[in-house]
Length: 205
Image 1: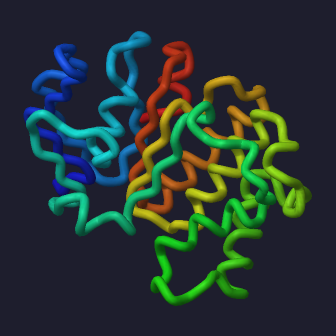
Image 2: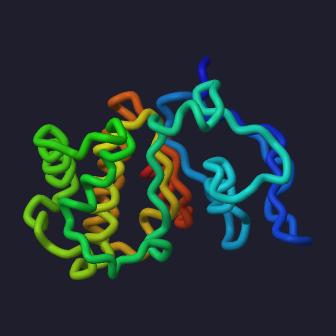
């Protein structure tokens, strides 16, 4: 069985504090998986260390058998809402189109095809009526849907989400769960940090 993620002996230290120690696991392709645990357990730290956003003290991480540098275009990441600058002057459609930039040559700007992909992604998350709305004018649930659409246009093999269900309304929670299942059924691998143990079996494999 091929693996979407292989982690071995991953350790992260912040000065003298050990945030993660000797973490190792393998996740098969086409999985819909949750990273669960109490607050402060290092769930978000694990994602960030895997993606190189914070330095690893030790350990190896492979994506589809390759190092991160070889697979960046195949990975989509959605951070926690609290880490995003929602006051940035940009509208919904422009935000989603940012997801296409990493898939295009550096000299090419998003074109008609990319715009069509963005509109399709917005429709899939129920946000097609908000294309011209500034992201700062949206509710928390709407903002989360927009960033979900931004990830969708990357057409990735692996999707990593950090607490996407946190602070959203029930309708948005169900919309996110539907998109996760659709991505899995289309052959992608989905991994999400998740805090609500009561919904793990409903939303994940």
